[in-house]
Length: 519
Image (cartoon, rainbow, N blue to C red):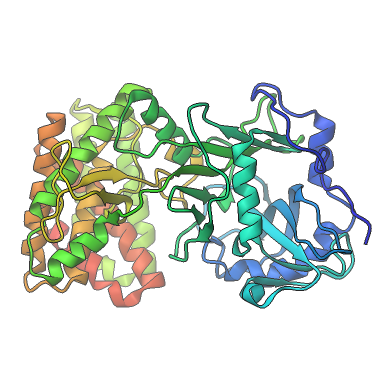
């Protein structure tokens, strides 16, 4: 099969191009169009394969079609010698609009009652797959430029994931893709790659216990907070968040609206905190040993406050006044009504829960204001890592009392929410409410004899640590904290009812407590 370049410059090394000089429109148009027959030949395979992926957001709705945003050949395939090729795709998957859905995502395209999400795919191509790669099979296209090739998930192939690291080591452009490296970062070559198998909404590759590359699967125009926030924090000198070493992005298609549309953030390379353990597992270990977790929770509260203070210094802040507070309370009430319609168990609590949101709105009408800033957006014990055995910076860890230092990771926010919403300044108490809910979950899953007592002590210690570092105790404004914790618990009820019905009792216990508190 003759080789067909998939984007201009696909057969040449990338050259450094400043961010403010996007590739010519002709190059972006050629990349989006791809070679004749590419999408037609791949569509039947992707229709079967894509909905089975953990990170596919449109489960339960049929895929009605695909649209190609860009196609870039990162490594040419040569059928004559059997070497693998690597193809990078951005594809819109078009599906019926879900009932009650109000927000577009991905490329921002909506057609009538259809919605489209934009996904990043990395496809390997070989004439035949060696046995170790058999589980990564996607299929064999019929016709098109990949005719005769076996197409598979490229992240399963160490040769191709090594190529991704090399692209990040040598910044520059390749068609619509732009690879960027922090000038101060040292990225060694020949780091052995391994794909992380834990379930997540994205994909991650660890390189030699030195770096971790997070690849965003569902993407949209605009800087992803998981790049934007760690970069900003690194420039303040905050040591609580691993600083990005490199990243890559894609220019939007030529037909995108506006003279300077924002690029898609595709992946971020950060230091891998080898030997660290996440807060979720540490909490479960403490529970299994009937141990105390309050020292660890206090230190984690301290770390959270440090990160919040650094974000407030690095990025714009705002003030929530009556209109914003009423809008916030109304949005929470709307989410409650939607969840109660889907989960009847919420119905008996609706009046009391709505009261928590009304209390918040009433304070806004009375003239109360709150500061808003950039936040983590999806903070829980799984997003906190404890590294090291010796105490530094005043940290002390739980899970047996070992010392260490807390770091926070994964600043993407809730991936189901639109990117613009995740980048909006919000009250820091939203992060605190998420962590408080996580303590409740740990106590329930860890089967403590008195889960609410264990969670209560741990929650109090976390808030105390936050107050020590920030000078602001989140418990001092109970209406604001209760409204955000209620909103989080309502979200959890809907999630568990849909995905883990055996866990529904965990957030329902919190719903009962929060409703009783309001009463």
